[in-house]
Image 1 (tube, rainbow, N blue to C red):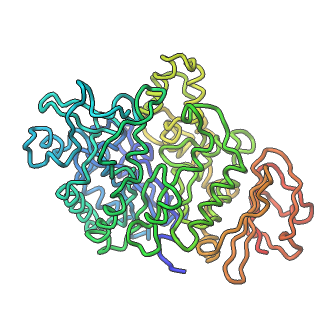
Image 2 (tube, rainbow, N blue to C red; image 1 turned 30 degrees about the vertical axis):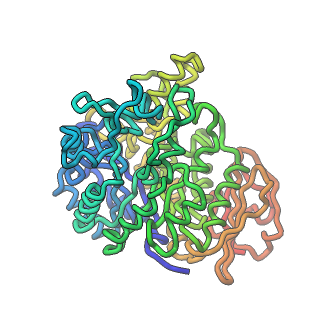
Length: 554
C-alpha cells in the first residue's frame, strides 16, 4: 500500500468563467475565486483544479491558448494568480492547473512563426502535410466539425487540427517543441502550482502513416483510432516525468478518452513513471449510441456497475483511479441519473455516496455539492458550446432530427449544462455577477443556491462535508479493496470496501421507488456511518426508500 497525498485528496473543479464574477463584466475571474476560498475550505476539499485561465482568443472557452505564461485579462493578472496561490496554500488548499498541450491557439506565437515559412525555425512545432489530389492529406474529420486539416494559403501546406481550425495540433515528434512545453511547465511549478490536469493528453502521439478513417455520418473519416493512445504517448510522458515532474511533488491527471485498462495501467502505474491517474470515459458513454450522445437514453445501472467495478478491480495494486460523475464536458449528474423534482437532494446525496466511497481520488465539479441541475435550451442563440451547436446544425440539416428534438437532446446531454453560472444566492443572477452573465443562469437558482445550502444542516452541501470528512478519518475508504455485491440487481448498487479488519458496505437505491433489499452482510451488528435519510429504519425493515443510500460498518 503506497500512500500519497493525491490519493487522499478530494478535488474540486472550478470553471472560472462561470464560478464568481468580482467586477460585474458577466465573466467569472480570479478575484472571484479568491472571494470563495473560505466556502471551499469549509466544504473540506483539499485541491482546486482551475480550468484554463491563460491568454486565449476564446474560440473554445480557453482551451485554445495563445500564451501559456500569461493570464487572460478578463480573468485577472499574474499578480491575482499569485495571490490565489498564496491564499489557497494558507488554507491548506493545493492548486492544479489545466495543461493543454495537444494543441495551441492559431494565434500562439509558435504557430504564427511556424506558418510564416516552410523554413521557419518552429515549422516542426506543428503537424504540416502537403495535400493529396487537390485536397487534404487524409479524410479525417475534426471534433467540432469540418475537416481535421486546414490549408495554409501562405505555404500551400495543410496543418492538422483535431478540434477546430483555431486549435492546430502540436507536433510531439519535435524535440524542441517538447522542451518548450517542459520549460513552460517548470515555470508554473516554480511559481507554486501543485500539479496539472492534462487535457486530451492521450492524443499527443499520432499514427505516423496518417491513414484514412472510417467515414462517419458527417462525411469525414474517424481519426480516433489513429490518434488515441498513439505509439509514442508513453515515451513522451516518461520523458516529461524525467525532465520536469520528477523534481516536484505533484498531482497529475490525464484526460484519456478511449483509454483501455491496459493503457491506464501504463499511464497511472504504481512506479510513478508517468501520471498519478487518468480520466476514463467508459461510464460516461453508457448512454451514447449511433448518434454519439444525442438522445434521451439513460445510463443503465447494470452497465454502470460493470464499468465501475472493472476499473476498481483491474487497477487494484497496479494503478490509481479518478472518480467523477461531473465535469465541464458533462451534463449535471442529478439530471442524468437522479431526480430533478422533490427527490433531487436525496438522489444527489445517493450519487455522491456511491462515488466517494469507491477507491480512487474523487472529483467534485462546481455546483455538484448543491445538487445543481441541467437547464433548458430552446434556441441556438442561448447556446455557447461548439460541440452542441455543430451537432444541432448537422442533424437538423441532414433531416435526422427536428430542431425540437435537438433542443431536447442538448438540454439533456449538452456541455453548456455544466457551464451555466454557479448559483450562490437567490438574488440577482444567482449572486454570480452584477452584470449580464456570459451564459444564462438556471432559473431554479431561487431554490438551489449556496447561501441556502450552507444555512440548512440537511442540505446536499453539508452531506458532502460529511462524506469528505469521513474519507479523511477512515483509511479503508482511501486504501481498502473493492468488491461488488449482488451484481444482477437492476435497482440497487451494493459494494464492500475492506482494509484489514475494517469492512464497509455501501448500499445505493438508484430508483425512485421503494425496494425490498436484504443481504447476508447486513447483520444485526451493522452500524450506520452515513446515509441520506433521517433514520436507519432500513436495518430493521430491510426496505430502501426511493434513492436511499447507506454506508454500514459491518
